[in-house]
Length: 221
Length: 126
Image 1 (spheres, rainbow over the protein chains, first blue to last red):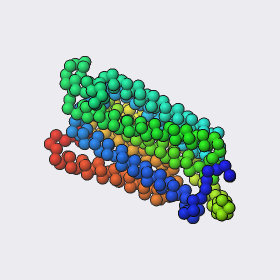
Image 2 (cartoon, one colour):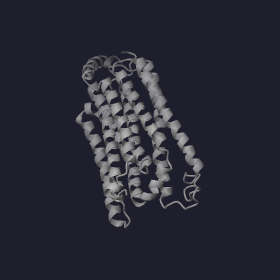
Image 3 (cartoon, helix red, strand yellow):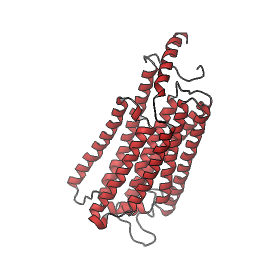
Image 4 (cartoon, rainbow over the protein chains, first blue to last red):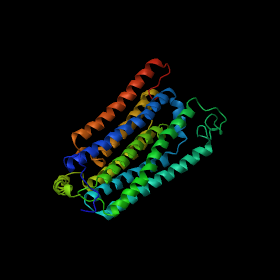
């Protein structure tokens, strides 16, 4: 008990109230995150509706196989995260760290695949403002790209980039929680930090669940 | 330290018994995982299927989008309810989640209603 990080803050009546406040606070943060990403999704809806053909052509430049593999990888990381929270609720400190390390590995695989994809876009000149020679001319056919093609890639990098930043922030947090878990700071009575980190990680997974069909699959048929 | 000794022990044991009947089982976590993986495969297959010959280009594209977003929303709901434990949390947490969805719907629908009524070449995801 003495090793647990749990302590009742003086402004809460009991642990149950403290826990509920923490959960609601975390969800308020996630609702704010929905608003944060929501602006990008609304922008996507507006420009895709105005330039549907350019968005199809843009989506066809992406590798749906890599996108699909990454979707499965992220779902795996969500499962291992959920298993870590479950291990914490049972007080199994070795399992907390084990599942978190797996979560970190899956998260790193996702980011590694993303690096391969970004490199490919860089080589093709699809990065607005940095390497953008492919955004206005198709180098294979020497035809100009349709209007809105550059917008698609601007949105692609803004949305997947913001998502990747969330993962890059998440991985060190997972590592800290794993170390604290190994040190025995969490037990069945108190594992709120593991649970809250899980909420954040699952939220990042949900964002990708929407990004995958909207960015990768729209040109598939 | 000493003044918190008594309130600490009592509520902790209470919240412990509270946790026992709380949250999904390992079996459920794996079931949700397989459902999410299968839905990912389904969304890829549905995206490759062309509805245009059946109902025309515009309507076909619309149906493709409807199916893709329907599957994505189902997957998100599974993650929120089970992985994120919202099914097992208080109604207040559920309200926060629903509020975020309604807010997002307002943002997108009102933006669409503005652009769609002022732009001549508007395609609802053709």
